[in-house]
Length: 299
Image 1 (cartoon, rainbow, N blue to C red):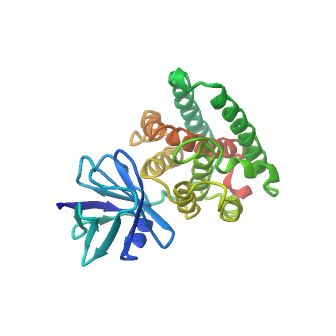
Image 2 (image 1 turned 135 degrees about the vertical axis):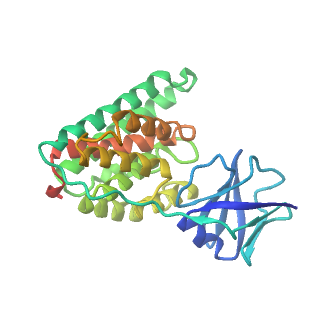
Image 3 (image 1 turned 180 degrees about the vertical axis):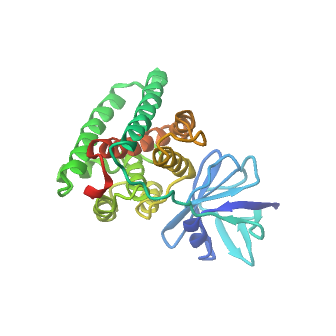
């Protein structure tokens, strides 16, 4: 049995392993998903980012594990089948810190517009450099549908009415571990919460909690639930925190620059196969809305 340490553990992941026992339900190149009482968390190598569902270890790779293997946790030792034993004696239990309150005015909304422009450039660069092998008829159809859903979300944010019934098709829309539609919702939920658009956040959160069960896979659903608590992988929080500091200082100091924000957006954009990109789209939709609205106080 290989003995190692858990370096970082998110708050939702901590709750899962404290259930004391469960099953491995999914296996990937650098991570596995643990399940206990229908709740999930992700245990991975040092390559995975920190996040609410993530348990990061000192390992560089995982092997000798199968779907269906059992795990147990007691006396600060997480044991996976007969293959691994992880200690939590020196684990950092992380919960993302929120930036200071962002209050927009006619002056600093210009800085916020600069942020949205920087994010748009990162998004455009990603699209331009995307592997052409992925540009199939199927993906084009999905992109068209996602574009329609994005328009619905933008209109809903501005109109502040009920979420349109047709928007339910966004949940689970797309391929992969976390479908693109779910990733967009994650980006929006976390951005709305962190940036203080609480009425819209509460409404979208209630809608996702009601509509998501049964419409997407269990792993993506777990990430949606985390976003309903205002949490995602740290790449999202880093981007939003940097953006907030930049806008609140109105570019008056050099601690945070547009280049810092662009780099953070690029890091998020390239996370996973495409989940980071679509999460960034959700963040961008929210920031575009705030530029248009010109103030948080409308919410």
